Image (cartoon, rainbow, N blue to C red; front, side, top):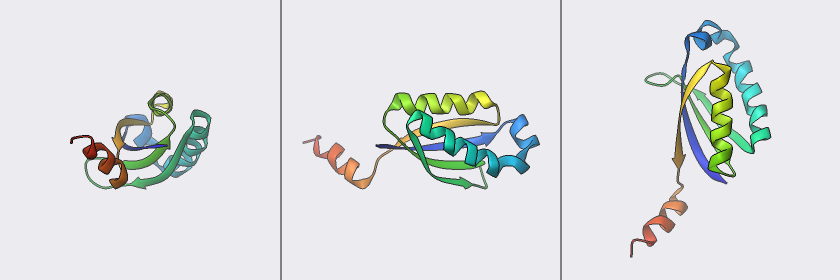
Length: 97
């Protein structure tokens, strides 16, 4: 499975109902399984982003569909990044010759 980091910011709708944020996170985590996505960690953060989520997915299509479903709910906007482990990066740089 590939690892992804999702950076999230509350929308106007999401911040108005921020008290429900942890309950929504549980529901989103459960929804992820329908897309083949496992949310391994979620953090509420200070600074530029309101939340940071670590996910694993079988494919880019799975994480893209999951992200679109989350966005369609209207509570957060996401920026999703593909993340590489040290082992992944060792394999990548070994191809450089």
